[in-house]
Length: 211
Image (tube, rainbow, N blue to C red; front, top):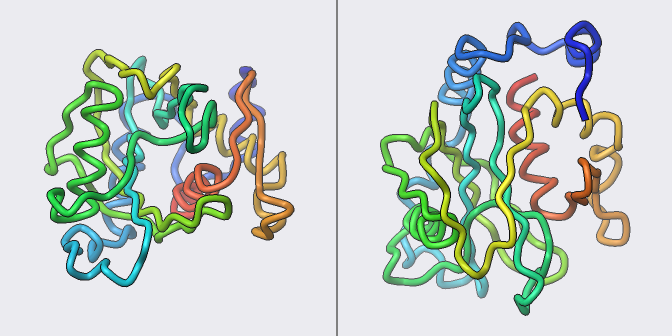
């Protein structure tokens, strides 16, 4: 789905000019670097013992094709937990990871075949709790001008990206902000993908920082 640029500018009223190029990517990076949390970058596993189920994900913002976009995956339908759902690269915390950030980086490398240096991590979002599996998810944000070629493993059915300007329109239009109640989990649709639950809540956080 595409929209005329004039419509997008009027719809979003973003705090940075809506330009699909490196200029807007740099502006997004500056905003997020100045506003994101940095405390979770150093949280160690000894601080997480009281929480039963810990996971971490990586929100990858990139500028492939000169369009600031967020990378997402469609999980394999063969998985026991969250089959066929739209997600960020990430997975379960292991003590050997030392930190949730270590988990997010390891799982990203394993799931989509892209190894990302900690130097590209610009901060973290608020922890999100899943309503179905009772996980506490630590989301971290990485910004890459260009992505290397992705190589999905058996846990990932597909890798795709949604432009940030399109996400802004979809989330506003589909009412993601209405409620966080379990029986009315926020959700919206893009092309053939239904995005809901923790993934939708994390996307909401990113876009709130950019308003």
